Structure formats: C-alpha cells, structure tokens
Length: 125
Image (cartoon, rainbow, N blue to C red; front, side):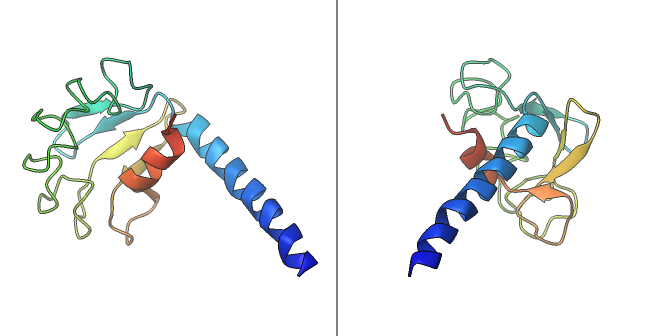
C-alpha cells in the first residue's frame, strides 16, 4: 500500500513536467490549416489572435476561421481540415516558435500530434 502511495505523486510529477515542457514548446505557436488559412495562435485568453479567446476571431464558436465553429470548415467533425475529424489526414498543424510542427488532430494515426482537448488541458488557467 505504501508503495502505491509513493508512486502516485512521482507519476503526477512526471506527467506535470512533460506538460510543462510541451506548454513551453507550443506557447506562441501558430495554427495553420492545410489550405494555408491562419487559424489563430496558442496564447492567453486575452490575446486577440488566441484560440482560447472565446470572443476573438479564432476562439469564437461563430467565426468561420475558428476551430471551435462546429459548423465551419475548420471545426466540423466531418471536415477534412478540422482537428476534430478523427479520420482526417489533413488536419491543421501547429507551427512552434522553434520552427517545428505538430498536427492538431483527433486522428491517432498521425504523428507528431496533440488533440484540442489535451491542448486545452495544458493551457487551462
């Protein structure tokens, strides 16, 4: 029993350090659709270009250039350019400030990748 209790905090520490590293790699990254459309940046919720600004162009559920518009090209679970389409081979990519990229996708066959849910969890305030 004691071993399990000791393992849990160590495991949580490892997970939080991995998330911290990922957060620093992705912060400031630009999201670009397969067709070249800019879909926002990974910044704080008060930034006008942030996907986390629910009142901004890239975070609003009503904006045509938002991944959160479930009826739009970039947010519909059926669109090939949406991060929510788990079968898409052409989801958006996050281009980091370190000149690397990662798919923003629910498709577990693509790599490197991160889902919108995981991205939100990492950047929650």
